[in-house]
Length: 494
Image (cartoon, rainbow, N blue to C red; front, top):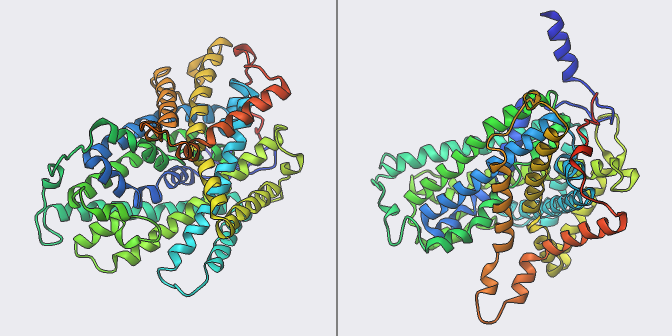
């Protein structure tokens, strides 16, 4: 028994051959996945989704995307448990599909989170104006950028702890919100029995039919993005073969319950025809759907409380974004797909050069929001599709991973975590992601005169990805990796 404890202790403090440290505990992994997928998409964007497709339509869209994300999570979980590397799906794509695909996925994902970092520090400054309108925005942006950098620079454990508490605040808020909402529906709070009348109002529960539901698939998918962070963090989990499956099993159902439960409460309490549902944004916290429900329940100081919660959500997203992009950049440097100086890891196990470089790029993207709105808008739009493209990479890599595993005569029973529903899971997820990517702005092509500008704004990320992928493939003459040549080696073994 004592020997087992000694072995577990040594695992908890192990350092890999690459210098990074496996210090993320099971609770960190769970909250990283939850925190990555619960943010302003839930607290603010759900109102617009309900207004567009009705409460039932929104629940259908978020439920369908949730099922897709479940398949993606299990696919990523199977690979990350067997090969826990910080490069995650970019590394898997290089090994099991084509190095050119891994290269394109890695750089696009890094770019996405670097731009997202800029978005979050802009949002944090807007949120602070709610309390202190006279303080210049640049002060708050610089302060929060410094805080996010510091949380990532101290140690991976400091990142894990900050994300744990940030995510816990969000989880508690959602649980309280659903509880208060249910009591409001039955008239215990607010003094009025609402019941289910708003689910039958007008065209409800589904307004606008199939096309309206389809139109919010992209919004729903964007809200769920971040669940793949658990794969990025796999390389620094203290016990990936145990912690990753545990996080995957726990996280999906909680996230789906939070989203579906919150949408149901909002749809029951607030009529989907209410124009206030369209107002949710970081500069209009007072009309976020969460604030509206709390006010309906008669709870005071709601806007201020939700402002604080959304601020922690923004900081959580920024901290996780910097972490994910740093690890992706470091992993690509290690694999020879980025400059070598980015491989440097300090004595705390932090890829410090990759961290500094990502922070600088995020800061430059932020500056474009001040000096050039047009440039900032295009940067933001260029990163919009990247999360879905990454999901395509995960589904495709897992399909090839399992095929290569069997082709090389390996025993499926040796997999510590095995994704259910193979091959249906990755194939369905792949098909849904492609449909969402191609159809995210189908309206631009539905009129007699095609809206070329609108189409360019929506789809700019796709040609950028294809140019990087095809360019690398042509220059380096890469080919699809034969199944019997796919590598299952864990290069980060301690």
